[in-house]
Amino acid sequence: MDRYLMTIDAGTGSGRALLFDLQGNEIAIGQQEWSHLAEKGVPNSMGFDCSANWDLLCRCIKKVLAEARIKAEQVVAVTATSMREGIVLYDRDGKELWAVANVDARADQQVRNLKQKFPGIEEQFYQRSGQTFALGALPRLLWVKENEPDCYQRADKVSMISDWVLARLSGTIAADPSNGGTTGIFSLAERQWQPEMAQQVGLNAKLFPPVFESGQVIGEVTPTAAADCGLKTGTPVVMGGGDVQLGSAGLGIVKQGQSAVLGGTFWQQVVNIDATTAPPQDMRIRVNPHVIDGLSQAEGITFFSGLTMRWFRDAFCGEEVKLAQQRGIDPYLVLEEMAEQVPVGSHGIVPIFSDAMKYGRWYHASPSFLNLSIDASVCNKASMFRSLQENACIVSAINLQAISDFSGYDSDSIVFAGGASKGFLWPQILADVTGKNVCIPKIREATALGGAMTAAVGIGLYGSISEVAEQWVAWDKQYQPNLANYQKYSEVKERWLDLYQRQLRLVDEGLTTSMWKAPGL
Image (cartoon, rainbow, N blue to C red; front, top):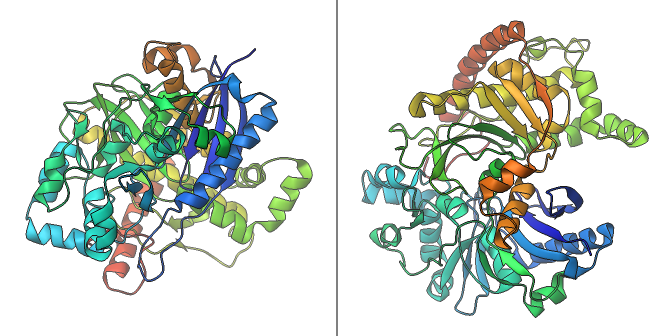
């Protein structure tokens, strides 16, 4: 009887379950899009509905088992990954009290208060954790304490959303360094919670669950969970991790100095560095624990690249969606075929969406396209679509350079994965913009594959995640940079940097509305 590994992925834009065989081959996927809605009367909030989202994940699991035509007992281990930063509070019985998704920004006033009451504390904590308050857990927990005191008093544990999935499966509340590290209450060097950080700002220092490294078994699927989702009672539940770090493992990015771009709902640019490397003094770049012990990851983030493309598709490309359905292909492939005919620079169209990462003072201009014309032969869906592709790559290049500037790591190749890597045009644009070779793995679902790696380690098939990566990661394509295009994109990048700063000033002057602004700004 064949055996399989399962990764459950609670992402920003969807919940998924993915099945892999013991050689790391993807067998089946169940996926449903979801949304994280603002809470009534709570500005800038992004709640996470544990009850509805658990039901959705269970449907995904059942779909995978049905489509793969396998029995529940053939799944020999299950793990989870998720969007990072999202947190869940539990009572003493392990029941969820309160939860938020990753970019919940309700704690604006709490960030301001922290900075005013404790001057220099953000910089101090950043040097230990690699995190600022922008998406950290401390301000959010203070918000709960001040706005929902009954919930705060009842809170017994806090975890990340991937940990919540595992808790639902096994009944064990625990955390791992790669995702727990994004709370900002964690030590990069020690790979452990720092409860004194919470205590220093007036929070309960006993909220933090045990830490397990990715790949360690934390429990078994309970009878209740089995009845909900269709897995077998007693199936080993293995600690997973944050989506970006597991995605890096799934791409074979397990050694010092290696780099990758993960092109999903957000785009992340990551470079593996030694865990003892101090974060940059200017707090521009984020630093997280990797799923590989002894390594951290310097990370740049491009906001909403995938969501921006979804918006553009849904708002403007109904005809292309219908054409894709008739041809039986992805609508983005149709759009890439159109965009391929557009020259480098997209006829001068400049998209204003995500800024390059400025972790210490993180906000964005108002979403817009600049330099449009009323000439339909050059200003159309194809050129606007290509401009969005180019822009995501330009921001990635800026973030990678910022990482190189402080860490000293600069490779001549990039691994590219996620939904954005599935086409033929976007990878080539990334190579042309960065001037680096771009390698595409055969398995595009790198995050889920990284999860399967941890499951394989958990049940003893391999000794380490690095060992699995050496066996499982295979390459599909490689894109070489066009150096003439590289020179052109260097000019486009400089113009974009200038224009983006001007657009930020419009936000500063109150004339336009920021796409997203970190709490406390």
